[in-house]
Length: 279
Ligand code: ADE
Image (cartoon, rainbow, N blue to C red; front, side, top):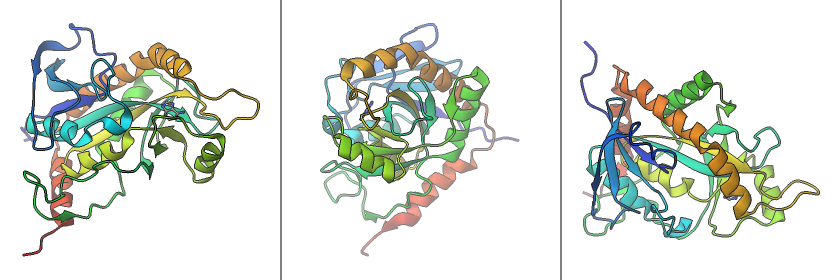
């Protein structure tokens, strides 16, 4: 007998899921967490019988800049409504020639260049869990969910890279050329502004989390080329976002069909083993 637990998949980003025939029986839910309010209402529904919850990372009107997103509330809210998984989409610049605008990348690592963001739930404030959490970050993402995303992208025939390290900058400005060249030297393949602390908090929450990055530009490291611009990012994003949404829809089905859910327990056990309590 397989595992009969019900899974529920949070989808952060959420662009490309506007089709009500794809995302059925939608209801909006306002949620408040011990860490404040998430970026917007949660939209619960089903994708081909699998329970899913959509959340717009920057709010549905894109009103929040990357360092103002309440990442803790976003992750906690999804956990609070019963999510076992989170699949995220993110627009990213490319730091290497082979990762071309329009390509998809299943992120597998990050370099954190953000500052001042709240990046743990275990901070001794009221309502927070007790202890200090020293969570290992290798692997940073859930390998099972990553595999589902990659297999979905391959089956669709999309150009998709199986791994990629994202350098996460504070924003809201883009990198300078010197910074972009340094990010390349560090071994980064991609650059964005939101992967940290989202991936860290999802792992702290004991959830299965993976992200599909959509490459929108070449940042500003290439010789004789203009720097990235908002219009370029938006144009490439809207032209290709359906690919990322398709991959998530198919990955939801793959994860929903899984009968061995031991990996979900493993995520929770890892967090337990990472917490130091004083008494
Ligand atoms: N998001 C999309 N493109 C980006 C870039 N070049 N730098 C940071 N974030 C991005």
